Length: 296
Image (cartoon, rainbow, N blue to C red; front, top):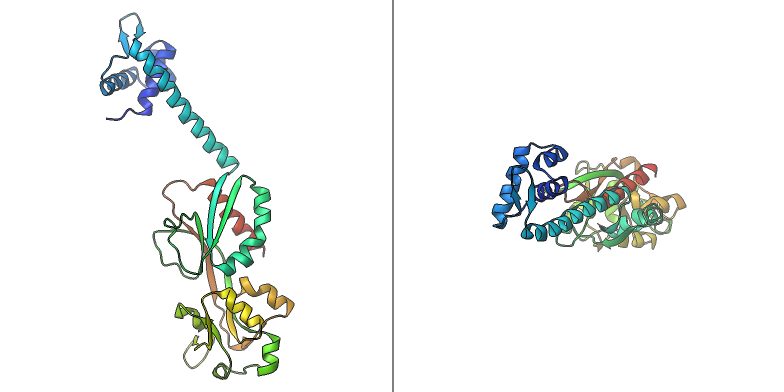
């Protein structure tokens, strides 16, 4: 059987206070409870720590040796608890964040300077992946997931939503004309994802229903690659606002088939594993991201 902290604390308190009764008062326990704790401790150690008489308690030589170690253990635990309290007040440590490259570049990177100024003791490690990763396997604290969540073992914190739009560059539209109907899209160069196929379901009203499955003439695994292709006049694309907002504002991309587009807002969630209280370094990053995204 392993020695418990309660037993160590009872032993040290009895020595310091000089009696079981006084120790019980300090620990807000019963004298019989403290006495039993001492007996269990001696039984586990198979040694006599204190000689008890009706008048006084006398610490044995073995008890003095153990007392020094017990004090060190209790001091270490107290120091660890104080460190955790300080980290809650001033979060610190390495924080590993994973997100798809477009979200990392367009939504997280612009916020990094402000976050680091507010939390200088946190060392950020930013990793990009366009595939869904295993958080434990990749030693990731937080992952940003866009779209419906499938992994029920994760805790999720909603951050925002982002609208999907069908877009093209002015250069492409000048050379190829703007499609006047959804059915006319097959006459154009369409830019789509290699996988999953669901990303090639565009939110357009058509004969197929409320979505239009494209057959892309040019495919890529990354939304950022598709964005760059669209900016290079390579074709028509469907992307989320979080990565194209500035492009539309500056006129580099413009929405097409607006009247046929359904309003589809993709959920954006921060996901993480949590067995106990959420570490402050994780919580403060999620809070910061959420606040900044609400202001955008």
